[in-house]
Image (cartoon, rainbow, N blue to C red; front, side, top):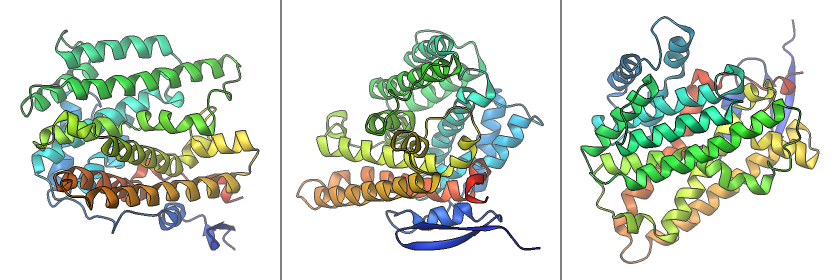
Length: 347
């Protein structure tokens, strides 16, 4: 029996793309990286066990259930083990717990889960409580709130001022409210395409990627010497935002197969298809070319900034951005979370 194949082309290269799981390998080969794809943290096995146990202890997941098996197969902790492979085990563990919390919340917002995805009022209500938990103003009541309080307490051990971290959570939550509202409008049969354009997607994806939350927490638990004012430097802010967008679009690419099966999804490839009347292959090629250009611009800005006198103090902070971009690629390459191949590329 012959294996069904299609030729997929980007940048003039082509691949006979078979139904054998090589979609992620091909996609990874098309993405421009910052450097060599990183290895896992030496303590990654322990970190993964402890992160899974953390999720269990706060009842974010329940052992033996579909949610537990899904979390176990996704290897959420590996994202931080790739991205912080030269950091302390404790720092990687706390960052991994944040990622576990974010991914579990993302699944609740997923339309297919039918928990929060089409209920913007409920999403906003829960997130307003989440912000109060982060501020220390209320006692947590749900498993998610108790886990979030634990993350807050761990951050407080390193720095008593969490205002910037809370601010990053706030803009992330606000972006989620917008997405939940669009899902709701779509479910009501309303046309939301005018609100989800390619041009408007840049800032939206920066915040929904939750990368800025990750940077701020890791900076706190790594005891960075940078002040909030230094981290708000115009170039650092531009690098942070650009890297967050790159990571968000990389996630769009790796999750494309899964999101093509959904009734509605915020994905740049799908937006390109809808807005510009492109085929899947055309939109996919365009998004890959554009995100690779963002990576090149990010690297050029980074190198120019670090070459200037007095900016060496930013090196480690920026390196963590580099590592998250590349770490996210290799995590996505290996995680079961992104195993679904876009069927239209196989037929």
